[in-house]
Amino acid sequence: MLVVIGALVPVFVLIVLGYGFHRRGFPGQSFWPAVERLIYFVLFPALLIDSLAGAELDSLEVAPMAAALIAATLLVSGLLMGLRPYLRVDGPAFASIFMGATRFNTYVGIGAAGALYGDAGLTLAAVTIAVLVPLVNLLSVLVLVAAVPGAPGAPSGLARALGELIRNPLILGSAVGIGLNVSGIGPLPVAGPVIGVLGQAALPLGLLAVGAGLDARELERGAGALASATVLKLVIMPGAMILTCAMFGVGGLTAKVAILFAALPGATTAYILARQMGADAPLMANIITVTTVVAALTMPAVLAWFG
Image (cartoon, rainbow, N blue to C red; front, side, top):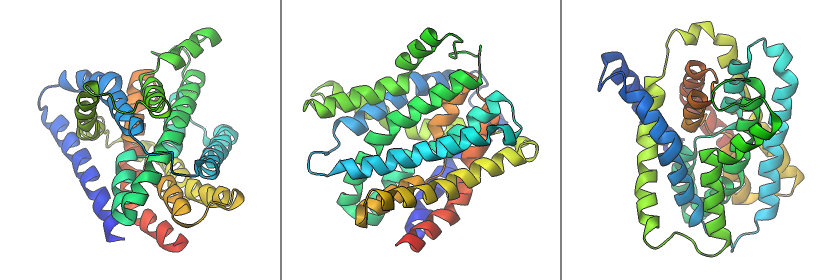
């Protein structure tokens, strides 16, 4: 339990720092929109390429795990679409709830998997990232395009929507990373280290940007939406993963890592995506913060119960 909590504490501290910086006007109001674009178009795609290009997948039987991961994500996504009329929120808010319930904090997952399960855990974490990052990015963009018509980056026509999906920096980063891995090329000799360094900057800047975008007033106004996203992310998603692991015969350490990733708090990338494509960014920032805080209790409980 202490290891998982220890992995979450630095994440929350950086969010609080970003909130404090923004409240103090440091380093300037124009800084945060500019850094958000840098993160969205450069740093996070670099992080995805670096994470996926060097993942060692050949020695693993990934098909049952991949099936369980995909099935659980689609199950919760379908549940969310069915619940949309009952949530009583507008399109941008629904897009934020959807991303809050389906996207996961990769950085906490990698840290917790390595600390809890060693090198084997890290390898399985890489498999999880390779399978789920393209899927959740694809689902997020599709929901954003459908729920926020006319917003920046959300074209109304089907052809333009598909074009936007193909050009999405996060999906492009995932595709490049998987392509380098599957082709056997792996990390590029010269560009690879540069991409790796750029990717390392994504985590601290992304978390600071989340804190800078936090609107404390939304915690009261959006209590229902926050509660829905938190329950879906930290209770329903791990439950769905336990179910699909049982369905596809995934057990042992492989199941533990899959369930660990299902129990993670919301992803910091979701805030950047919400800002760029017209979702409810303050709500998204608060969903990430609340799920991060609550996950300090729910993640150890889920893993202790399952293990």
